[in-house]
Structure formats: C-alpha cells, structure tokens
Length: 630
Image (cartoon, rainbow, N blue to C red; front, side, top):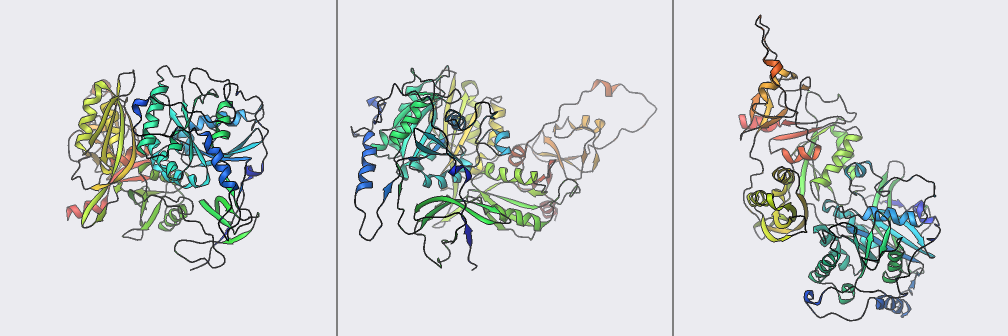
C-alpha cells in the first residue's frame, strides 16, 4: 500500500491574538467557584454528592501536579487555555450565541460590518438556517484563550459532533428556555459524558414570553441522570442567557448587560488542557480536508510532542501498520450510516444542457473525493459502471452533498433513499429513530394516525407549554420516517415540528406504506400547453406550468388516486371554426413547487430524481419499467 504523507498546517486564526474583553460584568459571581442551581429534590432519582463543581478545578490541578507513571513523560497544565464545544439541538441558538461571544471579545472592529451567524460560512448553511460543518474560532478573555468549536444541531450531521469532542475538555450545552432537552440534546450530551467532559448548561432565550427556565433545568438534570452522569457532572453550572442580545447571568431574573457571567463560568468550570510537551509525537486527527495541489490536510489536536509548520509525518491508519514511528492514540469511532441512495449518470433527453460534468468518471471522482473530508459517509460501486451507492447518516446528510454537487456543475440522477438493514443471528434488524413531534392539540389525532401507519410506537405524550401544543415521542423505523415530514406538515396545516435522532437497531417492523397516491406521468415530450394543463389538473396536482419543456416519462404531478396515470400535458387544442369562451372562464391552479428534499421524500422504488445545476425533475426509472413490462 502506498504510504500517505500529510502536511499539517496550523489554522491562521490560531496565531492571532485578540484583545481581552473590555467590560465584562461579573458582579453577581463569586470568584473561583461553580454554583449549582439544584432542581427540586422530588426529581432526584439517586443520592448525589454535595461537593460543588468547584472541586473539579482542584482535581485537575492535583492530577497535573501528581507524578506520571514510570517511563512516561511528565504532564503539564496550560492554565491560559480553555477548549470548549458548543452543542445543542437544532434552532436552540448556539450559533447566535457564538456571534455575541465574538462581538464582545473585540474580534471585529467597532465599525466593521458583520453578518449574522458568522460561523455559518457555507452558502447552504445560510440558505437553510442550519449548521452543517463543525468550525472553530477563538477569543481571549482576561488573558485566557478560549478555543470554541461550533457544532451542527441536526442528527444527520452527528459525525461532525463525534469527531470534535475529542478536541475539548468541556462543552456548553445550550437548551431552549421553552422546549428544553430535545432528541439531539440527548445525543450530544451522551457523547460528551462518555468522554468525561465537564458541562456548563446554558438556558438560552429566557426573554421569550412563555419561557419556563425552572422546568428546563429540572428536565436537563433528569437527562443527566438517565445518561448515567457522574455526581461531579450532575453538579453542573447553569447560566441563563439571551444569545441574540448578548446577555447572561446565573439567575434568569437578573442578567448582566453582557456575557461576562458566561465567560467567568467557562474559566471556572472547564478544566485546563494537559499537555506532554517532551513526549513522543501524539496527534489525534479529527477531520481532513483535501486540496488538489497539496493533497490531504489533517486537522486535529496535538496531545504530546511538537509539530512545526510544513513538517511531514507518516500516517498510521487502522488498516495499515505505521512505518516510521507510531502515533499512539486510538482512532475515532464514527457511528455507521443508516440510509443509502444510488447515484447514476443523467439519462434524460435533457442531459448536458445545463451541467458541465455529466460522465460516470466525473461522478465517480467527485463522490470518492468527498470521502477525503466527509468521515461519516461511505461510497461503493454499484451493479453497473455508471451507478454508485452512497451511504450517510440520514437523508439530509446526503441532500447536502447533492446540493453542493449541483452547484459545482454536476448532472446526475438519484434513486429513493433506502435504510441499511443488518442480519444478526439469522434475524433481520432495521434502524429505529426517536421522533419528537410538537403539534397543536387540534391536529394531534391526524398526526397520531400517520405515525401509527408507519409502525411508530408511542413512548410519551405531554403538554409542551401554554400555547396549547403537545409533545409526542415515538420510536419509529427509519424507513417510516421517509416522507413523514411533509405528511405531518400537511396534516397539521404547517404548524407541527418534527425532530428525529437515531436510536438503535431493532426487529423488522413489517411492511410500511409511505405513499397512498400515484404519479401523473407524461407519455409525450414537448412544451406544456394551457389547454392540456386544464384537463390534467382535474386528475391531480401538477408540478408543471404552461410553456415548460418536458420529456416522455417525466413525473408532472401527483395523481389524486393510488396508482400512476399516463397523460399528455403537451396536447394542443384542435383548430375549429367554432368559437368558445371556456378558456377564459377556467383558471389554472398554481403548480406545486417541490424542493430537492421534497422530491427525495416523494419518489418510490421505480422513480428517480434528475439533478442539474438549474433544475430538479422527477421521472420514472426506465430500467424498472422495462422489467415490469417484461
């Protein structure tokens, strides 16, 4: 096997010194101690240590000063550095909180124009309003450098969270003051507790009219107990904040004018990193980037030894023995993918009209290049030379890849998402996920019926606040969740919120019907006409409008009944000498506009999504259609 050489390059921001925070208000904090806002004793499920989290700092100092094992290099403590990761469920405000932390630490000039959600630098992140990639930054507060890692809040990008938790000693767990702990909160907290990290809980958005901070703190404490946290971890510091306004405090009713209380909590409660400067080189690579000219660039944390800019090192991988030296740190284990989709070359009559990269070689090179940086994704060759199987943590994980590729000029077709099953001891197992649905009470019956059809098992149901909404928790097969989001939005008039996270593999749940309606399929290509669309809309809901070019086999709408219906939406009205005013009295309905995510959730086994830089179309799969006809 060819030996890989990796050039390790330090991030430019790592060498930049930032002035300390000028006016951090900390009058309501006592120095050198972590305070615990204890929940009501009725919620405690086991005896807890009365020692406050202030002892955590003392324990770190004792471990740093204790002698090292024989033969090992002595370790030292970097007291001027803190490494933290900010984790939360999606939309709980962690990226906005980072914005305020950066502004108050004087990273930017006073007259500098700074956009919102600074850390969401990717175009897709800004468009969708979610964090997709983990990113790092740093600030300086009272002479201490605080390295901050902003992580995704969506479960499909859990691989981004798993890999960066190895780089920190503590986390800021951001929880919404109304919603409280959600599915992704459980996931990221479990990972952090397994690493033994210290946790500072930030109850965000306490200025909301329906905020219930006491309930949120109690629920968070219960979650710590359920996840078998240690007594020291359960004695977490609670900080209340309004991330958008840049305010924080240790009491929800008494916030400072800045984030000083939050910075003070980080310095007190997050342990200092321990280093082994004189030891053998040890670096844990947590992410990789790829450059066509420089090759692979590894990003990680140095645990021992020294690295210099431009220094070349040989890589140790799990599949190959190290040749020169040995980096003696365990590899990061990323959870296995749960969903697979097929990628193939574009075979529609419109191929090559919009994209630059259309061949199977282009597609193959791009997909395998994605593996250089996307650790949670897998790519395999398909049954034919122009088909590839791509596996990820969820449909959104794969959708982001698809969207990036079409913006780069690629044309290709994708098949419906399929779950990755396992066979253990002769039994077929499939992935299950925990689904949390917030829904108004008047639509709860329809949502419960939908989840029942998809083999969902109700785990809990409770009122989620004074707005008349309920929180439903279900355990649902992953394949039952495909297409469920749109169905729930339709049933609740767009007022329900669905969040999911992978739980475990379980027994095969049986057949699941995910779509009750068929498709309207064009049996003739050309340009659509108003005359044909008027007749076609009586059979269902159309995706196309008059004057749009289509091809034979393209899906042009949703049939109002089960089963597909072939029709002609390019038919022109026959010329006669009889005048008619019918066309002036009939109004065409607005065509249904489906996004890439909607199309992926809509298609079934015999259907494909055609992806080009400018268009997204759906069509019947000609290969499967031929098999059915034969």
